[in-house]
Image 1 (cartoon, rainbow, N blue to C red):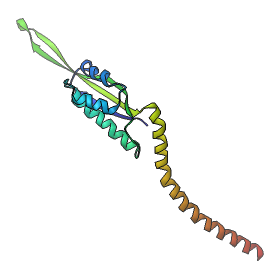
Image 2 (image 1 turned 120 degrees about the vertical axis):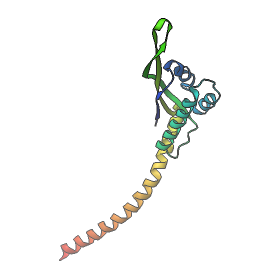
Image 3 (image 1 turned 90 degrees about the vertical axis):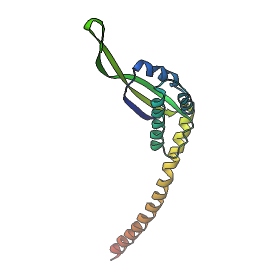
Image 4 (image 1 turned 180 degrees about the vertical axis):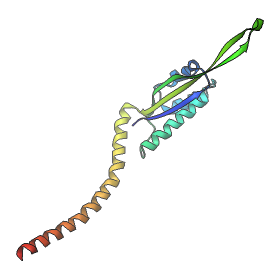
Length: 158
């Protein structure tokens, strides 16, 4: 099961953020974290935090499953709000400065072959507590049914 993390209104242009997004798209999460840690571009820091957040979101949704096969499945950068400012220009004019921001959406998921193994592991984790509950609930009603059968037989005899 995939997990999503979003970064909203980060104050850098979408074009600069897309350079990093294209760099990490489709790669394994551990390689992405190492690459972003050593990347000199300034959007690398919040993007690394976003990847870590997506990993934590995935762990919460998939308890008991190994996250070693996680891959950046989807990442896209959209334009956010634009702050419009004025800059002094020659001869009393003003130039407009657009301070752009962006929204980043990141989706992580297990790779193709690992996906089947992850589903089996998750099913096993879910099934173990459910079997215990079924065993306990199966024993209790069985006694009641047996008692009910005895009482109906006794009422028929009388």
